[in-house]
Image (tube, rainbow, N blue to C red):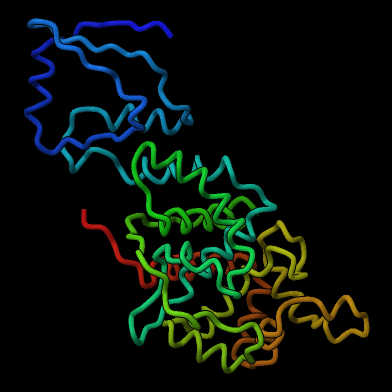
Length: 311
């Protein structure tokens, strides 16, 4: 590419120095322009092309490069829109269940007693644990989106995963969930043994979730996410209340061998518990109620145990 040179008014360069709180936009070094000084004229020579970014990323860069104080350099709406656009490029209905599982396994390590775990991105250090089998692929899907967003401004894994789960639900027909940004990533893995085993009975599940700060109703609402994926609860790429309807039918009781493959042992246990069954019946009969309650408990889940950056 032929190098071009343009003059820059020194007064303009002096003007930029008067701002002490201007954010610096970080781009790969190979894309930075070469600045040449010749006498009293300052020239900028650009001999390379900018990185390939999405439309939202380019618009975000354009608006945030304005000379404005730190407190107003970018809005939360700009940040979330950038994340949603880049996640949308790598997300499909077939990948949604894996991304939602990634959320549960990152945030689900929270322990109210010792204040460890939670939505902190530590899952990136825990992929070799047996309970996280298969999540390397889901994390790999998000790596490309993270690279694109990081080229504009850094994003934590915790924020990216939280937003990806919400987008996965929406893509599959579920409710729109607003996710707050600003989580700080952990630098070490969370303690082991903090996720519930699939073989737990209902009473053990309720006790396990109570230690994390979740009620029986919230446990049942969160479990509705199992409607996505290959657990046998309706269409694997549609987020709806099929999970609850099928639980009430108890297909595993059928002599049909395939029906016994529906759900996890912990799923089947919930419908045998009177307290949980009341909520299962409510959600089976009212999808809107399930959507509203799921939105609330998802928000609680992705905020639980999170540490936040200062503004």
